[in-house]
Image (cartoon, helix red, strand yellow):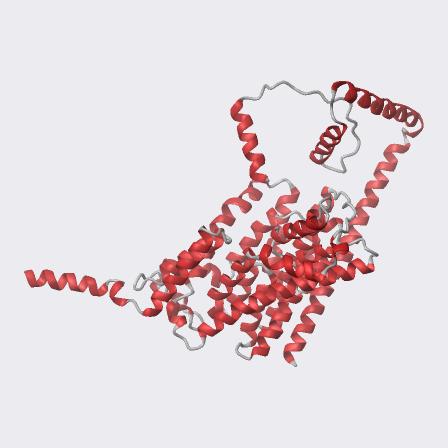
Length: 395
Length: 126
């Protein structure tokens, strides 16, 4: 009986995670803890980084059975195997793999976005377009390195759109094996926008340009705000059908907000729904960063290159927006402050606040926030269109 | 070569679609503004002659009253401007069509908890 007892205890110990840890598991757990520290102590995009890092942590504890990366590597996917053998995170990951969660997050973002400043000054859409050069410039750079395929390069490039859901949506479709590092890079850099942008903005503009005070925006009527999402949906989806999921949900959310007759739906979309989807999305995206990926040759280098390329994407996008802002300033005879160009990266509303702050440093009486919101929300539309274009050309 | 063509085509398509959007926004906005102006003109034309003189006199008296009141009661004219702007922002539409005749401070009738809740809400938006 004593021997049976010893055998039972040793069997339990052998089945425990401790006995099955490999050095790579230690590394992944350590990385997850670092990101948890950044999210909680340094407050780097905590709403997403906490679930992402915790998903990474939980999925990399061996034998937990929460996530089975091998189920997702088959082409085509074996949904029967996923449903029968999948763990908790596998089943929740279906929402990411099938492209459901990012458009639903865009629904919530649409409800929270006010397109008034954009409607009042439609030229801001051009600044939103210019900043998307960060995406295409990075695509060029990633392909030039020679280490990435076209699809992987496109997924890395979309980090430059500064749009988390768009980056996840495109990466899931084009390069799901890179989802973990790309999502982490995208959200980390979005949190670093106030650090990355100001030096570039100051380097590319003169003090006189930063002091330009812009004309007050005209008031926008309710009718215009209601018609905007309907017209944008029709035109954009007819032009670029591959961008339909993101654009349709973004504009539906905005219509909920502006029409004023669906208060309950508007309230749900911007509160309960977006919070639920954020939890599921973050958790499962983090869980895809598994230890066995690290063991693949070259993955570590790829992850490092993704981090560097992500920084380049953000910087080039900011620079392109500011330079286009300078062009618009010259064309309009000094009516446009080039600083609002940097808000074309779609990190709403952080990038607009950065434009406001840098503008106020040059001229304390200058309030650029609402002017910068125009390019900022234009960037959301621009990055969704850019993602659709990349998907149709490279996918 | 293919990479360059993806970059070029991508930027051109993004710019072209957003330019098309700009044109559509400008077109429908100007249509709506044109309809609104036409409606306002029809409304004003029926009353223009009689009311013109009255409105001008009233406006002058109001401004004069506000100036003297503010001087005597110590209400800052900047405060009046801010309150008028807040009312205009709350009202849907262009915020015209009303005139602030008097501003009176109301006594503290709100319960303390309501005041605390209101302050918390305002601070959360800052």
